[in-house]
Length: 474
Ligand code: ARG
Image 1 (cartoon, helix red, strand yellow):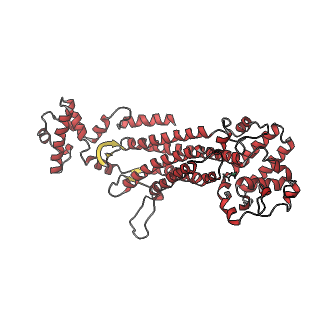
Image 2: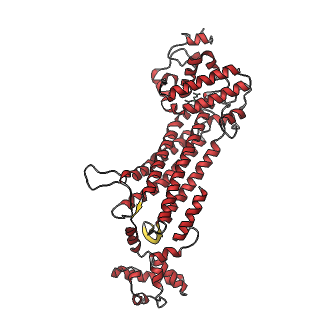
Image 3: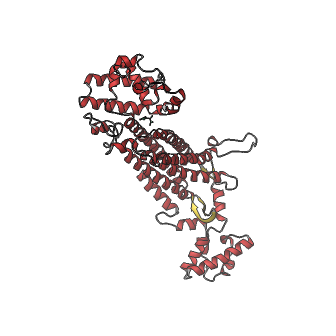
């Protein structure tokens, strides 16, 4: 009888050869070869092997604690799993598509090593809670690597912002020259975006750090398991509350991808500015050659490929977020095979974010500013027009009237090709008799930025203080 599940019958020929030995009992014909390939996930979920083995060790340890396994069996299982881990790490392990996924590959290898005791590991557990546990552990460890890389980028930004605290550039709205700002201040705006990303990542980590292990297939298990103990062994804050939710929930993957999409959106914005600034038309900064590439036909070209690629990769990460949201949309409880599709988008989002952060963290500190060129650009476009209006207000003119006076002076400047600071006092006084000799102090770029001297303002002194506060917050 094929249902006769003695270890011997399973190791021999009691079930059809191509049917999975871990669930083949009720099947009367082998899995179709295409279906086996179509349903297998081992090609991409093998990267969970460390987490899978850690989870199994915790599970076996708990089973021994509650008396379901003997201490001897536990020791055998742990030793066997560590040997399997070594085989994988050292490249000796042969992954089999017939064994479907990382979980069954490892379990089969364990059984091959230690015999029947290996078959006891899956007591009181299902691949459904197993995979939910593995992915959480994986995202948690990747989260910590990403947080470190994000911090390295933030530190690099602070260093550059400090170096560029006095550098004057045009600030833009609508990509039109608006008011002069310091380059350091602009860089600190990027820092703020990343600060929110780092905090979003930590939020995601906090919520994902609950252990689904013990939910089993969907309803829990009849064995006297200790879920708090496995949670503790795996560094989780505690066990999840509901077994149905535990095996079906992929919020943490969606949240990670939401974090990743927002981060990539920020990096794409910085990338766009870097691309603009390296162009001959802006000529604000220089990226070292090692972050750029040339053209096969135009010998003069030096292209800012790294920021361009980061900008481009934002699209795929946004796509992964949408994939996961759509994957989960309308999914009935509890586990569905659909969920196997969570891995590739999630893994690619993780890989992409890590690469992009690394590229940025390496590149940012190596940026050099072209200060003269930035300064010249800030002088064009009447960037101190607001300063002149504020000057008139201080002299007692109502702001709307001051706005009108300065508007007329700008129109005059456009006509005769002069910046406000290049006009004589007599020329300026044609527009308002309230303009006096001291007006030239506010019309300089240095005066303009220095005057915005409050928390969050662009004054060099404020930039330096903001850098100090940011350092303390890291
Ligand atoms: N490879 C599967 C996944 O990634 C593991 C869980 C399979 N569970 C099942 N009942 N078929 O989702």
